Every structure is written in structure tokens, then in C-alpha cells.
Image (cartoon, rainbow over all chains, first blue to last red; front, side, top):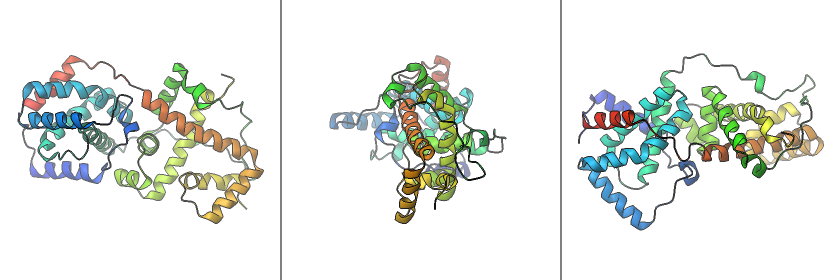
Length: 236
Length: 79
């Protein structure tokens, strides 16, 4: 099963896209709740699967797509939000994966490899629509008075992380609020705090300076904190 | 002398350990004196942690994927 090869310029863009954006292997925690590190037996069966995919084995390809499409779609949607754009990302990611499977060296698990491809595809999509006007974030930033002092009203006592996360409604609200952040802030937060990338890796992925990543990260965290304040407190 | 406004500029570096030692000490002195910034920093850290945990558990198990989408992927791979 061979996908039609794109023209050389597109191949170059694709390769550069992969290499100039997310290169690091995602940590286990970022691979989702279902991720397990590979045992040696699993590694051997993954090598066999890679061989099947390389040879164009149709049933193996279908199993592979069905096994991974769900989490890939959820991951893409975190970045691009729009469901149909997320579908485009995933379809494109599978095409890239099958074009590149010949070069897959097995240094990381297939899932980690796919994870990087989906993330990069989603970032490329976002980059292509960067001109869209974003909602300002200023209203959600901390209030500092003219005397350079914090002016927030005192909050009720903080709930413990355990208290917060055991409430399904609170977890859902946290995720929903994350999706409310403007793209340019949400993406930095996702890459840096959720995926666990370093500032340097995030800067490389977004073609920004490290200084700019730090400033945007702080603003994103501060705005996000303001958005989720109600679930952080004990009075709710 | 660090103010609440300065803390805004330094907090990301402070948390990732890249703030210089003298600046760290200044910032910590400010935190000793300023209850509002202490509370802000605690809630800020908690927000980061809660976000990570909530996003990790979100979408697991993933929602069912429409069959026509799976078929569209398989179709594009066969082309």
C-alpha cells in the first residue's frame, strides 16, 4: 500500500515541518492515560507490525488506524479546536506516517512517533491560519495597581489538588476553560505545561525566541488561573 | 526591592529555576512580606498542576470515531 508521492517541494516542506518543530519524544505522562511503557515482548511485536505496515499489509494497516485514530483526533482537537480541521490533521498525519514508515527506526515507540507527527501537523495548520484575529487576554491577567501592588480581592481558601480533581465537573471545566484561551496562549501552555516540553523545545516548535515563550507562558498561566479560579476554591 | 508588578515578570523564570540567585532571594523576600503574592503563587502553581492532570485524563478513553472518517483515512492510504 503506497501513498502517492507528493512533489519534491512538498516533500521538503513536510520533512522540514517535522524536523523544525516537535522533535523530542513525548514523556509517558503526555501520551495519555492509556499509555504504558513498552516491554521487550511488546517491542518485538511492534517491530513485526512495522514490517507489516511497510509491506502494505491491508488488515494490519486497518488495525493500526483503528487503534490510534481516536487519541490522535483528541490530541489534534486540543490544538486546532475545530473538529473538521482536527480530522484533516489526523488524515494528513496518517499519510505522513505511512510515507515515513520506511525511515522509522524504532528508537521510540510507534505511538510516540505518531504523537509527534500529529502535534507537528496541528501546529502547521495553526501557523497557516495565524492571521485570524484573537480575543484579547488582558482582562484575565492579574490586576496590579498604580502603586505596583496586587489589587485582587482576597479569595476563599484553596482546595487541595485531590479535592479539585475528584470532581468530574471540575475536571471538565478545567478542560473547557483551557479551550477558551486564545490559540497563541493555549498552544504555549499545551506544549510547555501539558506536553512537558522545555522552553527551548517550545521556542523551536513555534519559531519564537525563548524570551517570548516565557512571557507568553506566564500570561497564559495567569489568564488560565483566573479562568479556573472557581474550581480552585473550597467554597464551590 | 521587588514589587508585585516585578514578580509578574520574574515568576516564570523563578518556577523553572532560571532566575539568578540574587534575584531569587529578592523575590523570596517579597513573598515573605506580601500575602497577596504568596497566595497568587500558590494558586498559580496549583493551576498548572490541575491543568496537567485534568488534560491527561480528558478524552480517555477516546470518544468513538465515525466509521466514515476511518474509511476516509483508509481510502487515502490506498490511493
